[in-house]
Length: 404
Image (cartoon, rainbow, N blue to C red):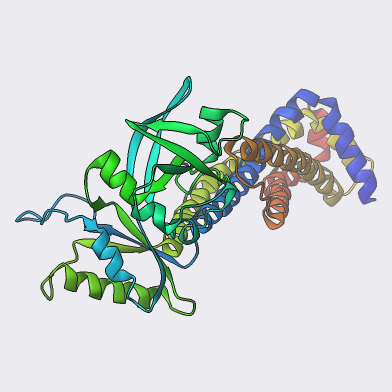
């Protein structure tokens, strides 16, 4: 009985193909939008987590300046005092830290043969690679003597290699940074885009004293990255770092820090949380399309009832029960929404896959979201198809037969 009802419903929908297709469009758009939004959102979250993890695990970053944002407080604010290598040396004495990596950064024009580019130059110590999770896949890293003597050597990222050297092996080649010539001694393994979309491979590493003395002429450093000793919590590490630096910088008790200590794991949590909220908001907006699609189904089914009034009258006159007529029209509405739901799932996954390729993020479909969207499309058919179906079932056979 039910299969015969479904067959009749499909035949009725086929008689008005264009109208049925337009009616399903709202369901298709709604289901596809929800699935695409959630899938892309999950992929973005995984990409953010992977990007932050690639920066190094169990790592804190110390920077000069207050953590707060917005306009300065009344009465002005204290000028930001930079860090120096002496601050980094002091941090090395803390038992809670296993590695300390001071850095200084500058944007410079780099020339190699006929090719040139503007890229980020990062001055760092030999601990930088380990603290920040970098791997040298060609050549070698810095040694202590090269940092101490301000040697003119550098390690380049994959983007710089492609820009300046193409497919050639850059190790042993010479390039010029500003007025300083240096030898490429290593090539970094590619990391791709960072948590904020920046190209992590567009950089050149040099010994920190080389950058300070030959490029910048300053002893200041931009930040200090520290790796915690295994078993030490980030909260404990941050407390001891703050205590040491407040003492070194002679910050009075009760006065705010003129530096900030950030935990990369917390950054990942914040970014993932923001991404989840945005995904939820966009998915909610997309879900409104399902409601609009349901209203469209109800309107079309009401029109169908009006058009088929005489047919309904004949069925009722020859003995069909009202519940059978109700079932027929209800099944038509559900079949309409289910077909739209199937098409919507296919379109949504296709859009999400295309977006993941374009945005270079993981393709992360969620099975429960696909099933939920499909089930919701069926529910839409039942909810918005019931009223037209009940109207058809309650028609008076005599009045229906008189209908022209």
